[in-house]
Length: 516
Image (cartoon, rainbow, N blue to C red; front, side, top):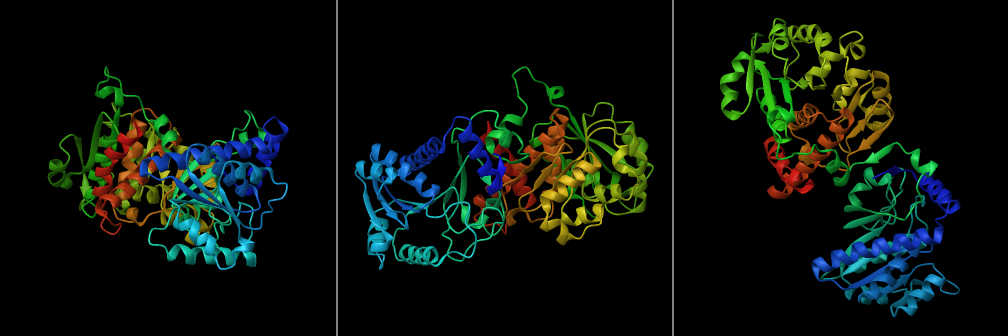
């Protein structure tokens, strides 16, 4: 799914109109697509009645088109017009011809008709305000949304709320929200995801997010110029390697994982298991020797390289043991749980020039990496770097506040400067490629705010790299699956507070099943 600003979307629609798909046809396509989604949800739940809040703009037009289509397939429809004139409006005329009921807000000061409509409706379409609104809201819109919220609060069975393109009251560039914004259960956005929908606080009002094709012509310059995507299931499913009946373990590569210390024993296990769960044929874990006894029983599928250590932390002598066992590896992960000892830094510094296979650097590996002069040019193959904001701060010298306030820009800048893929973790994880392309993971959940979940992510990415998937695509797919696994684990457990890294890891196979 493409990610756009409001001005970019306007430019796309303008170019589309000039190249054969008119504004009227785009609205028709949007309304029909919206109706098809609602009809599908209705069939799943036994719903057949809908009220559309119809504003004066294009969102109101999309809503009227959807109501007409729903009426044609048997839904009972109600249109509630707010500041939209009925005279000489062909969409209103068409709606009335479909047999639906209609009321104007201007004649319903006490919200009696709205209450009657909503009490009789399974679904509420919020088509009041569009993507171009600026805050604060005008008084009439604010008054109407406040009144609607009161009506909904008084219903025993309030309708399922579907926002048309965006919840009314959201600034679709900044993500700011009016206090009166109605929270949606589902937002159906047109052609592309508006950037503000993947920012807080707006994201909390979006609910589920679905996209409608509005029939844009091919080869639009304004569309081709877009370089940022929002990851979705279709995108990730297309990335995952094919697994044919003739495959063997060698088909899916070997992930070589250098991880762990006596302070962070579980990091190696999480990363190694994740690499296996995502489909790597073989995982070799290179860990400080004292960790083997406690870890081997938890991951009997792995092969092991036991490394020299100093008090449980990888020592510089370990470089020879790693290099002597890399001959069959197809991807390399370094970093989870290494700790901050100087001897481990020397190990990394010595091994760096010899890494000739796809590499992933995470956690303490990133901190050590950033202290090595000219590190980004030493790596011969495009690497994947997976910093959280604190690690990104160490690597760039920027404050966490600077990073968090400009996440996409910071990730893109340093991906280009370093020549490697950057995965800036956190709410709405950003994946940035050196060529300027970016992808946002449309998930923000405290379910992933737990020690060890980053190790799982690093393992997923290296597992995909081991199977021959491109660096950027491995990062996108790994981060998407990781985020969905966090959501799934929270759903199974019933809350986000109880989710452990092992729960996220266990949910990976369920997410993969859904992506097949």
